Amino acid sequence: MFLKISKPILVSMVLLCLNAGGLFGFPQFASQFASADVTQSLSQSDRASLNAGKVMLTGQEGNYIAKIIINTSAEKVWNVLTDYTNFPKFFPTVTAVKLLESNGNQKVYEQTNVVQVLFFTQSSKVAIAATETYPSGITFQLRDGDSIKALKGSWQIEVISPNQVLVTNQVNVEPNSATPKDIFFSIYSDNLAKTLTALKLETEKRSQGN
Figure: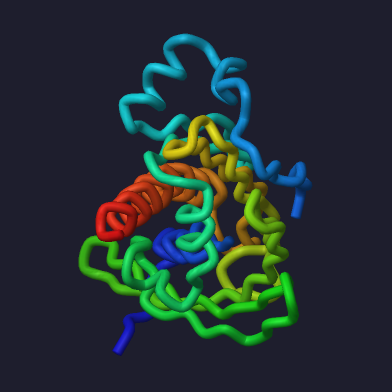
């Protein structure tokens, strides 16, 4: 049984949308590998951080861009990002995913999240509509949910080498009127980085198993 909790704790429900898999289109993924390192436009310190396996997160107040380098192929990253019903196995806070609609590259799924803060536990659900552009990325947006007012974003997969890709998650999110924005955005940005780290760990683990 879940407890009714105060308004500040409601912000934890925002974590539901972090793993949704739009605002931005993707170029068609070429059959050949990229001829240049897609990280070259970044600063030397940012490239060093990414190459060390860290998440690069920029943005504020609901507009964020998060990047991470994953040591595997684009195909394997794609397989994890579109493995919706198995999200609970590797994404933090997700406890259940139910595929509601599947029509070609259009998917709608309902995601259940459970978050514990101090002595309180809260459960909530969101419905996410995703458009897949194989194998370069996914755009997504909120269809229904009780914890946030709006959500749009994208996942982009860019090849660095045959066994290394740059994954970018870009998102715009707005909390509902009952949720304090400052707390909401603090929790959201913190857990966005955790989500990309979880994606890297799961994808590289699957690669090692093949």
